[in-house]
Each structure stands twice: as structure tokens, then as C-alpha cells.
Image (cartoon, rainbow, N blue to C red; front, side, top):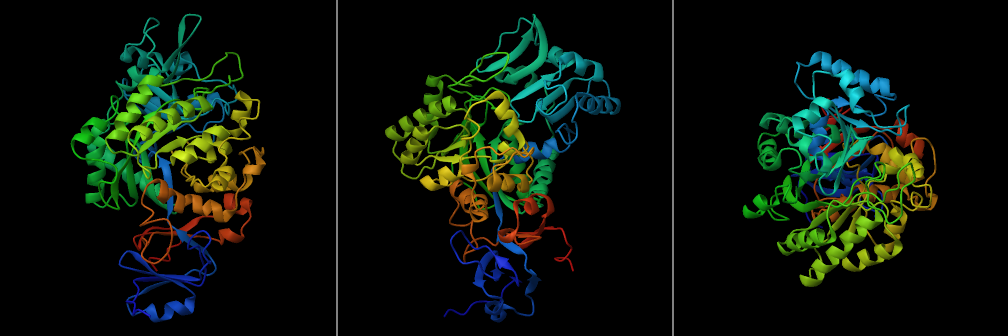
Length: 545
């Protein structure tokens, strides 16, 4: 038997989820930022020295640090300083307008009012706010109000004026600027938002670093120790690259980050490639991951590209952000440069466009372990799944979309599409590694609704959507740990608590393996979060004691 050093930290007397399929341990020892050993509490006794910190689990569950496989860390942090327009904060249109009115009273005339998170389905009026209603709430301030999905926004007249948008403004390809009876409503979708986004105030360098830290601390509070920022460059272009470097350098990034680079021409890929920022560059705290391409929008906003129409007053199949030719050319170019791809595709028509493009790229430049990803991949067909499996393409879903938006999906798609969407069990049974994530700030980074949905397939209103796709709590933890590491190509370092893996750990207030879904949703918290063996979140004060 090898002689092991004395541990820096020992957690004992509880339940330790080492990996899916591995025996649940009682204790884990950490040394030099890595897992040293797992086993029983008595096994750890020889590893405890005078300087070892001992944490008594008292029956609680410790898991590998969670991996938020698809979120927008920097926008999440920025949004935390803006108006929170989510349903819990604005259930009625009057509530929403009141938030904007109150912010206008605090702002100077001409200063932008930024808000995010409303869902027209949850509002009492069951529709989007109108430009004129925003005008009345904030007559002297431009307003940019983003829907929960992040793919639609409503703006007021002053914002349209600053952006130079009029009734005669051409609608960009892959976008929408709504008019009703010849008048602008203020609703803009996908690429149609570009004129307004071009005149939004740009955050300062300090704002960007503060946002990274703010978002990371929030994720830490749920046991999240790794995340992929799913579109670096989407808000402040290339300035986001040095912002992340500065956050790491100054100790203000308490989370491991994979940077998903926003593709050119609207993104930063060309500059990154010129500087050698290719998939895999960097280290365990900050590394370059895949390249992001958007192909469609959101199902709740009826902009996800579908082969079947949405229900409602206007027949639509959604929106394609790119033509087939543009998508194929972009995919092959990015693939040829050596990048992994992470393509946003929600509707089955967008998934088809994405899949065809990836298949052609892999045929032209074979790579058996590129691990291209389809982000969201919400409404894929059985045949598309089989083709993805053959090509080694992984789905990266957000099951929480069904918790937050499942009843809306049923409203706009009154057929079988919602029942078969985000099919976690089917994917796992087929051999995929569908990494769980929230797409924060689209949905809250709060892990518990996501876990609850995977266990029950219930929406926030209690509607069961596709009960056959429920998975076990062991699979849920695997989806939030091992699968996240795999799709981000760092499973050699993270995702399990086997010896030699990173000492990233989440300690929950109860044994999740024995808890009911309702207890997990409403009565559970993360007590401790360790990153490389150091505490980055302590809800109980026990680390400081």
C-alpha cells in the first residue's frame, strides 16, 4: 500500500457520492487541491494530522462540485445589477411597469433602464408589454426589457429613436421587428434587436470583472464549481476575454470557467483564433472551449425553428438565424480551425440544419473525439438522435426549461412535442451524456427546480410533461457532474471524487439520495462549496468555526 500524506481536509461521517455506479462512501480526504482518498471514516484516520481540517458531515451528502454546462456567467452577473422582471417579482403587467417606473424615478433623464426576465405567459394580460406602455412608465429614459429566454425584447419609443428604428427600417435576416396596423409595437426578436443592442451602454472593465465575481458567487451558493460561459463576447465583444483573465489574476473568479467563444462576424472568433485561443488553451481555472453559433430562438417565444407550426393567432414555424448555406460554411470553417462547436438549436428544423452541417464538417475533416455539441436540443426526432450518436455529437439540455416554461410549451404546441422534449432518459439509454444546465440567466442558476424536474417531469404548476423521461437521483447527479465535465472535455480532472480528481465538492444540507423530490425542491440548501479544497461558500459558518 502506498504511504499517503496527511490530508489538508477530511470530510467524514456522511454520504459521499463518488461517481455514478461507484459505491457511496462515508468520507473523503483532500490534499494539494486533489482528492486523496475516499472510503469509510475509519479509513481516513491515518490521514488526519495536526493541520488537517476535519468537517463532520453528520449524515449529509457530499458530491463532486456541480458543473453548470451551459450558462452565461458574465451576463448573469451583469443582470443581477439590473431590474429583475421575472414572474416572482412581476406577476402582473402593472407590477412590471411599476418596476420600470420606480427605476425611472431613480435615473437621470436619458439614462438606460435595463430589465430582464418577464414571461408574457405568466403575466395577467397574457401578452408582451407594448412600446406605449413602456413610454408611459419611463417617458424620459430608453428602456430595454428582455424576455426570460433572452431572444426577444420590448423597447420604448426613445430606445427606438436612439437606435434609428422606424416603420420603414428593413428587418435583418433572421430577425423580427413587429408592427401591428403599421405601427411599431416595440417587440423585437433575434437579429431584429441588433440596432438597439448597438446603442446600449457598454459596461466598464470593472463592471465586467464585478459581474464575473457576482455571478460566480451566486453559482457557488448552489454547489456549482465549474461553468461554461456559453457566448463570450455577446455583450462587450473581445473585452470579455481580458476581463476573465483579470478576474482570475485578482482572485475574483471563484469558479472554473470554460469560455465558449461567440462566432464571427458578430462575435470575437476571428480575433481569438489569431491569438491562438483554440479549444483546450488555458488551464483548469480558465480555458477555451467550443465556439457558439446561433441557429434559432426559443420555443416559448415561438422563434425556435420547427418543422410543424406553432399554435396561435399567427401561423409560424419560428426563425432561422442563418441560411443552410451560411450555416454549413460557418460550421466547416470553425471545425477546420480545430474548435469544438456548441450550436444553439432548439427546434427540430434548426437541429436538422445543425446536424447536416456538422455531419458534412466531420466527413470533410474527420475527428472521432471532437465532441461537437447541440445546445438545448429540445425538440429532436428519434432519427436525429441516432445520427447524433453515430457522429459523436452530444446534446446539452436545460431540463429546467420544462419546469419554467412547460405549460407555455403546451399552449403554443398543443401536440406531442412538449411530451417528448428534453428526453433525458432516452438520451442516457442511448449512450449520450446529456449534461444538466440552466442557461442562466434565462432560468435561475438555482439547481433545485432543475433537479426536481428531472426527477418528476413536472412544471412549476405541477403539470406532468412526458413522465417516461424521469430519471433517478443518481443519474441527476451524474448529469450535473460527470456529464458536464465530459461535454466540456475535462473529465480527466473533474466530475467525480475519485483519487486524483479536483477537490471540488458540494455539501448539501441533507442526503439527496434519500430525499423526496419535494424535499429537494423546497427544503434543501448547499451548506459548503469547496473549490480545489478551499471554501468558496459557507452557509453554516462551520468552515470559519
